[in-house]
Amino acid sequence: MKPLYAACATALTLVTAAAWAQGSGPTDPQIAAIVVTANQVDIDAGKLAKAKAHEKEVKAFAQQMITDHTGVNKAAKELVAKLHLTPESNATSDSLKQGGAQNVAALKKLSGAAFDKAYIDHEVTYHQSVLDALDKTLIPSAQNAELKALLVKVRPAFEAHLQHAEQIQSSLGKSTG
Image (cartoon, one colour):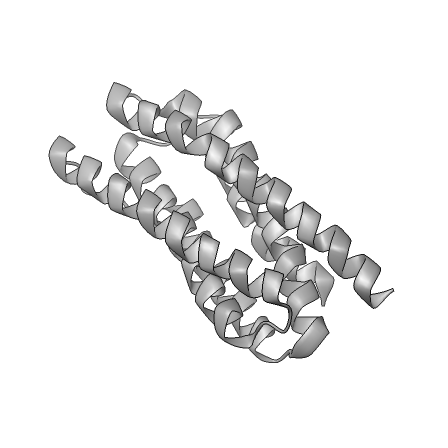
């Protein structure tokens, strides 16, 4: 089942790279849709994990994802409204929605330690993919200075989430192996 999680998590990087490989990159309205969708995908997975996780540290991580990504989405939506941008669905945002739904569906079938491991493994891969997309596509493509500044501002949080998920992944490996 691990390849499904990896496939879903890397959708952001692969689709973003492929969609704009020969073009000038996503527009600001497309970036807005990608950012909001990427955050919502992690909020949805976090809500499921908060309800189903076995280990306390996994539940706490899930709550942090809900809180932090809700905050980023709030800031993004406020900025989009201020800039009079309408988020524009695109191949990347659509792929993220689909991948997020597939991830949640797969996670719903698991329980206990298997759920915790699958959720955290996905979070590691997903946050790495988000960082890659931010660095290689989203930040360089953002035309509006305020949108670019928001992306730059939230990047350290995604990096911290990745490191936290990797730490939990390591501790889960020790507790189950």
